[in-house]
Amino acid sequence: MLEPESLEEMTGTHDLVLTLITDSSDHIAVGAFTYDLAIADECPEPKPGLPFAIPLTDIEAPTYGAYVLRVDVDGARILELQFVVEKHLSEGVTGSLMLD
Image 1 (cartoon, rainbow, N blue to C red):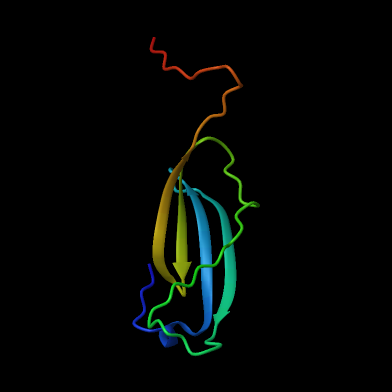
Image 2 (image 1 turned 30 degrees about the vertical axis):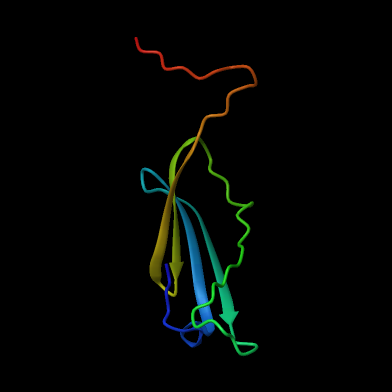
């Protein structure tokens, strides 16, 4: 995670890249964004939180399985989120493991 010493270090234009990758390293989707940070008023906190949301509704995992979402800011990897898309089961059906 980016942890600057002060808000001034974060000002300017930044490039954010989100990459969705399968467990076999296939790139599914890449989203690139540019954002600007500027100080509008005097800030009492030296390192304030700057939360902002990026909608991921247009990025779909093509099938169930394991995935990684990589987050890069200005060319530096700041986060990798690993998650699993589970196989959807119809209502009333329970999953089970069957071995032959």
